[in-house]
Length: 116
Image 1: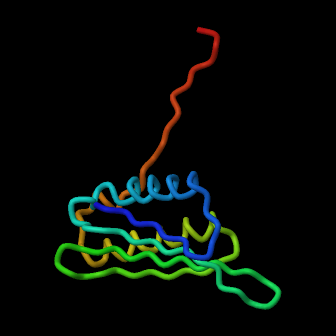
Image 2: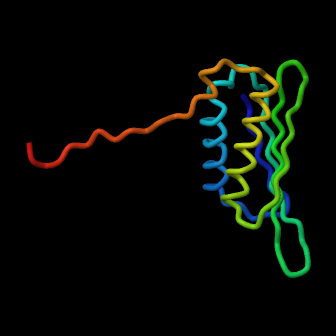
């Protein structure tokens, strides 16, 4: 699975790009064998008075299908989170993945106190 992140007119730090790539790898881990490439484009859409950002996520499958999701928001973190969640749902609908891919991941803490 190749991940391509482009930000033509948006200042996105290298740390943000790496974090986004890692997030995509984690989200699509169970479907990685069914995905050829993920292309992400983040750009600013200039409007009078406000700056909206737009994120387009394209997921290319081996059979030639492309799942495309577009999202617009002001905050970069919320924009990236929402676009990746929607693209994951879109790919699941196309691929028809097994039920375990739909189960949410639960994180449980098993910490004990200092006293025994």
